[in-house]
Image (cartoon, rainbow over all chains, first blue to last red; front, side):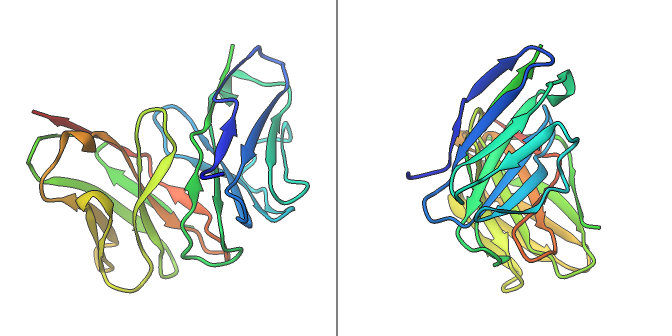
Length: 116
Length: 114
């Protein structure tokens, strides 16, 4: 597609429910990132994929958070047993180069998760 | 550890006035610095980036930023604000480690009034 696509755009979950957030990166982009943006804050890094390999998951806040990118394209961020503090916008970004430091990251519109 | 501080969570200017959004960074290695803009209910869009070439970087929509190592700053400016510039602006530093992992500031919301 022309840009990074995320679905759903909005998700309301009851506390304790599991959710799955989807990211379709730009075709051919090797790098894929997930960020969490709390209300009124800047995005915070969650995890990074290079193709299908998850090279950095240092930002995942707990073992309830799990991400995968099994075929090196579409990625899913799963949150188990959601809690109110998980309410945030989850942003996905992709970039073409696997290791270049100067490559622009293209962001999706995000998924706004509200846990009630 | 790398970090970014944006001074002023809200900035308000008149249409046609100078825009100045402040960003200071902390980095133990030569930094890669970015400014992103976020419109309501939209993702982040890259305005400009500094990658150790020219210290004055020009971006889209008339914005520019100057890298000042001595001040550890990367302030964003635009000579004349337009109503369409109203948005949230984020400064970010590229974390060391071989890929483009970004560390963001808390953001500055720019309001432009007639």
